Image (cartoon, rainbow, N blue to C red; front, side, top):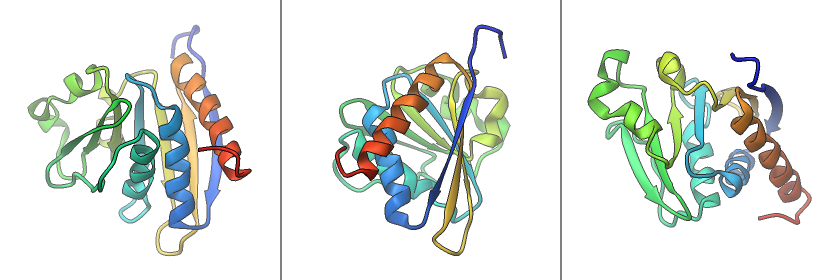
Length: 169
């Protein structure tokens, strides 16, 4: 990481799918075109539930589903959202889905299983590690790896706190 870049972190606990979706929605409220969010978690951790919230926060109408078989889904809200799922592909397949082009598209991009392409992820992005399966309790461990993602994290924290207090979107 370059000296000019910042790093920050935050942890949230979610006791329900609704809270996980709500945290995603709070992020979606402040997500900007060009932002990249990297999601990491086991099967059933709640990655797609989180993305459903992000999409709702971006104003996407309609159902948001996992792109496990289609690999990429595009949604339109107040910004374009690319939802990418790398579960079924290897590093050698990233060029075939236009991975770098998606990241550079100017749209907001959320990548599930981003750890499978960690060397191709932007240096400045928001990493969200979702821990926990089985029970409803999840821990979201968030790491911002640069100036833009640190700013995004600060905005997300404010939005999530406002939502929790019942005064936010």
